[in-house]
Length: 362
Image 1 (cartoon, rainbow, N blue to C red):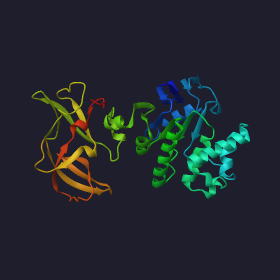
Image 2: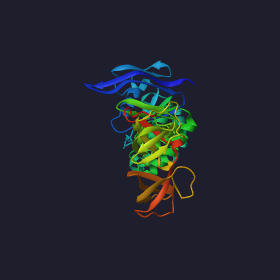
Image 3: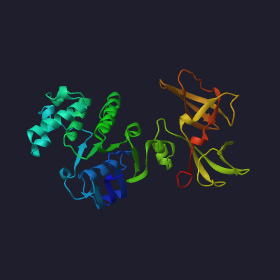
Image 4: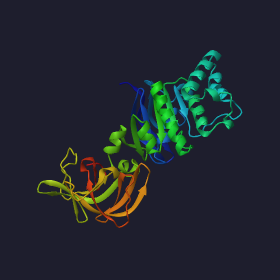
């Protein structure tokens, strides 16, 4: 598969502060890649470098095999959608969509054709004569996406386009953007700090921290097999449970010990042999801890209920196992009383183990 965007040894510094360092990334033709990470991790900076809005310190950027490192944004074959709608308030939706094309000298018949197509895809045809003040936030963002769409470019760049919208609108527009990608098949690079957006939209996710890509993989791999403790903690709502302890080899079998509790690791998937007395962190997502009764087969542990959080479709229960607080996702409808004693079972086949020193996955 050919690459649509290639980034080679990219570095960017502002004075003595290095924001991106020796970053390499290949984005495939037609791929939806999400740059995910907390504020200040370098994701928007990287997007602005691809767009040509920031001058790189070192390295090169290729779009469709052309070196665009020093080209102006208008010459890169990209369309960009920002967090702020940045619409001209005195112009109608139609004029906002056509403005860039008119400046570029595109023939009127071609402009009308592109606007009609973008308006149909984004379902904004009835809004074309309105001004931005007469639109909702979701409608304005559709117009902002449409302005990029009419440019008929190879690569679309989205810089947190939904962060100004309420939760319901974000959810609706997320679906629209996914439909848009399926309809167009263009390469899309999308910046967000919202893990739900990343998991639902992306073909692949690049999780960033400190200007470095921590892991680049498809959403399921990132979620189920995080490369390090940071990725594991950043992905998932509620977050992954972390238990501090150490590995022991007992009768030739690996065991995770915390407090006075032993967890068998025979089902844990690892390509390398776990070492005796190795400090480690055991990660378990809330859905990988199961409430069981006394008749359950296999290894079970006593737990004490702390609080419950009914969440509609399911309930999150906070428990303590050997003094460690754990969250468990369970079916809705059941009620829990603080202090109630239960038994739980860990799905160690879906667990994550991280080295106590490097914090990398074992």
